[in-house]
Image (cartoon, rainbow, N blue to C red; front, side, top):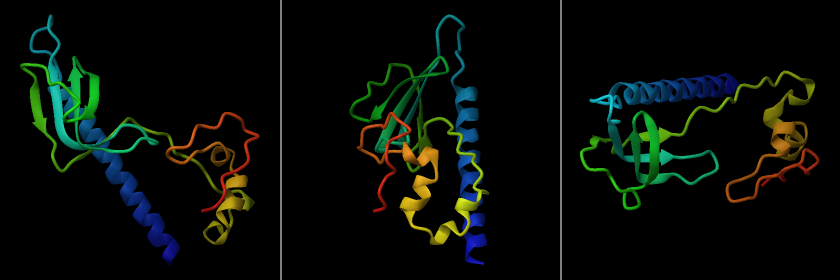
Length: 152
């Protein structure tokens, strides 16, 4: 029963994350249109917690500047200069994550049976994706022959 709870909770989180990302994309598409075709519209999303990349630290109270529907700058509130005349959306208390990541994978081979009770090192050595994965702050691995990460 515990396994189905985890699976359901994970499915709910993934669904909520997907809905949130679709909402942000729709918001950007709706608000970042130029008022005049000769001049790109400028939209500023300010105050959100921003996850710029999977291996980067989140930016608390971050700012994103969108010019003509394209992201022009991302950073902390103090590091970003907001262009004059930009439309500003207060995103305090919201979270923005960069792009979509295809994390679709099937774990139906024999080596994944009873994975919840297997040591992490054994599972990582069975997974070609995991063998080249790095933890935040570690350099990226470049070879499939790199030994698997050790369980912490």
